[in-house]
Each structure stands twice: as structure tokens, then as C-alpha cells.
Length: 416
Image (tube, rainbow, N blue to C red; front, side):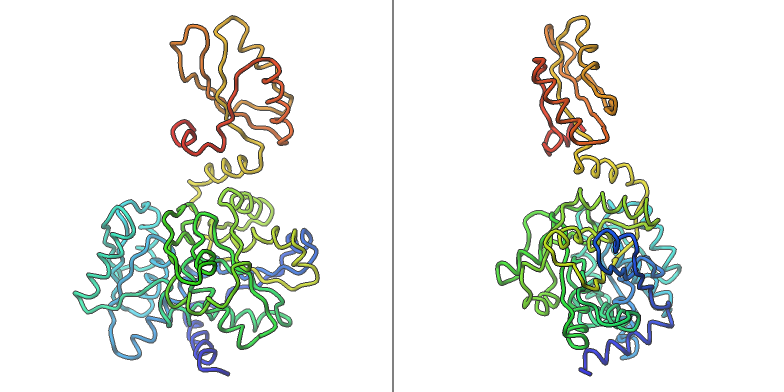
């Protein structure tokens, strides 16, 4: 047993004072779909509904034991803040949590609930970089320990306890572990532990298409800071992989990193909610979503696969957006700008082109002053993408000028 795996075993034992091991469940639905064993490591069932509690707890445990500090600082608007808050209350330590001013009240309230009187929340900065800078300045000024969400050896060690539990729970070695990637702390910990204790286990990484910091860095051979990040997958949308995580992950191939589109993740979230009753945040769906890519590539057959479900902190106020994005990705909802002739019967002519399963979800005149034509924003929902293809052909054949703006990000931002 290496020093690292021994330290992880110690951390895992200490964690039992905080919560029991999260379940590792054979998922019959996914196993039947892909024709192999699919196990889910349910990190959405920790007390704070994500694995982030593990790293925060371990880093704080070691700092307190060393007598270095009992005051901890972090910058986070999500799972890391909640994990640190929960651990602060457990240890009776002081926590100062910096959050952007734009953080939703629901996340602020949950962090306060988990931390109680042990934590103070400071709202500062419109953007996370501003919040991070303020938190690090505060930590230095007050001789407090800045607790990174992923760029810390003790945090990585804590996240690796996920792998220790998997080995205890799984009936035999895993052939493949699918890991969600944000800053890289979880992946660095799990690959480090299983690489030593289960060398036959392979790894696949999943990071959102709008935040491919690991894949881009592996392709370049050095850490890359992305110019732009899509924040939809807020638990994994990181512009730069952590220094320590990248040092431990740089030996992997960029081909091992899959990058599912954000809108497709929405389909997976809805599928797990409707079929399994499992509530996932976008980052929590990453490892499950890429199973379809692995299956299509023939990389699942005959394998025992473990997907780490990284989080379930989903605000149901986002559900309409998730449904909308899922429908658009699946091709069963589209938006058009229709140039409608200003004559009696023109609207009726259009309506008669709709099929029995086509439903108008949006209808809005955009230009009411035109003498001969009027522009209409129209949204159509249906049951099969082929129905919208058929509708488009009917419109073209009938001379209706129509433009599909479903995937036009600029127009969609202003009109949809």
C-alpha cells in the first residue's frame, strides 16, 4: 500500500463520523439499455448532495489536527461552499464563504443551513474571478486557510475516498470507471487510488462541451486557460484545470476525454428523473450521458462499468429550461421566423400545414407595421423530428418564407 492509498484509507475511515458510505447501485435501466453492467456511485446522496464534502472535510481535518488554523475561507457559489459549510459545523470551525453577488438565493440559503452559526457568507463581485481574488486576499489578511475546491493535495486525497468505497462495495474489480471532470480533483484522486489498487481498471473522463479544460490541455501538452466557458454545467464549467490535478492526469490521452453537448445532458437529466426518480444537476449527469458514446464505439460490451454521479443539487426552477434544451437537441421543438403574407386566409393556410402531432408553443408578431408581409416568431413542438422536416418542406413548396432559428445563438438570445 502506497503512502497515498494509506492516507486515503485513513480519510475514508474518518469520514464515517460524518456520513455513511454512499451507495453503489447496479442500475437495471442503464444495464439493459447498454447490454452490460452499469453501476452508479451515488455521490448525490451525501448530506450535501455532492462529493465536494469529502475533500473539504479531509483538508479541514488535517489542518485542525496539525493545529495550523480553525478558520477556513473559500470562494464558491455551489457544491464546494456547501461542503465546506457542513464540515465547518461538524468541526466547530469558523468558515468565511465568498460568493458572487449574482448567486441565486436558493444556493445562499442552503449554504447557510448547512453551516449554521459556523459560517459567514460574503457576497462580492459580479464575476467569479473577482470573488476568488477577494477571498484569497481575505484569507491572507486574516491568517486563515484558503480551501481550494480541487487544487489541493488534501482535497484530492479526500475525493479519492470515493474510489476506496467503490472497491469495498463492488463484487470484483471495475473494468471501466467514468469520471466527471471540472477542476480535476475527483479524477486525480480516483485515478491515483485505483491506479495503485486496481491497475486493470480503465478510465474515461466526461467534461461539458462548453468547458473542455482537461481535453484541451491534454491535446496541447500543457495547461490551457479557455477563453470562454458555457456556465450551464455550473458544477463542472471550469476555464482551467487545476495545477495539481493536471500534474496527475497529464499521462492520460485526450481520446479518453468525452465532451457531451450541454443540451444533450438535459435529455439525460430528464430520463433519469422520469424513469429512475433520480434528481441530477447538469454536472451529475455527465458520466451517465457519455455511456451512449462509449456504446456506439463498442467500448462497453462485457464490461463492468462504474459511473460516478457527482451531484444532485438541482434547482427545479431550472426544469423548464432543461426541458426546452432537451426538446431542441432531440429535434422535436423548433423555432422559426415566418414571413406571413398580410392577406385574409394566410394564417389559416399555414395552420392547415401542421400535422396531427404538431403543436404551436409560441406565436408572436415581430413586425406589425409591414404593408404586405408580417414577420412571426413561431415555436412548434412535435413527437418526432420527421414531422418538423415535413412541415419545413410544405412551407417551402407553398412559397412561405421561413427561417429556422433554433440553433442561431444570437437570434435565440434575443427572441426565444
